[in-house]
Image (cartoon, rainbow, N blue to C red):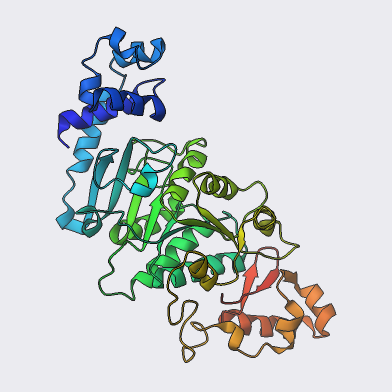
Length: 391
């Protein structure tokens, strides 16, 4: 789009009191935003409220600065780093059809990602799965997210998540790991839908991850440049995460988790919802258990997702080949041993393990360190240990 058209779209999104629904009604009546802003207030009032009509004939404060900032941002030279930028509108052929089919599609999508995706259609008609969960997952939960994302990406899925700490970050990481195994993938490995402007990264701890997603996949936002991390924006963006996807997989979630908002919007959008069960003692599993009681599909392997979404299974959808080294293969195939049996699948401290095994604390520390180095046990805060399993 040219500078004039960009300015008109930004003005429409900035106009106070005019949300997506009212804006779509105006666009349906008058066409492009430029045509809206040449109408008299009385004409605008025929398809909007009087307050909206009054706001539409006023130029929003800060519009000129935002237009200049956005236009400058769009002039980024992708040949320097392979990362392209774009703003696409509801009428752009690149706008994702799956999102258009939802109740509240954003007027604009700001995008930043590998130039090969933005050059044509960044959202091809392909399989995509949202993966969401706790920002403070258990070690097993984070490992599950990474392994499921890797396996499902290998099966052809685009992994969609929200760039948050915890499960989101692990899902993006797993998808990026899988993408390195394909010389010329036909779809982005992962899409991060964020709750800020694309000139900001939140949380800052995921800055490096955001840069790698921009280089290999896509970052997407409905919020103008400069938008800070405002609390109401994150639940709102969840409808985009689920709307871009055929289904939503909740890996770990407490009962009050924002991930359950994503699951609810997925149901409202007619999408499938999947949940991974966990320990009955873990608060991070209660949200998933609640979803399963409400009808979400219980998932124990990536194959469960493939079968439900009717995609052809891969030769090895979960894990690595049988002859891979222990750190890369399915750990369930390795001998379990008495310590792992005693540890079970819930976090446990040294004192409890001493009571269960009869081993002294010093010997236990050595054995646990060996298992930790093998990737079979994770050391948690508070002196706890948790067994890890490949999914």
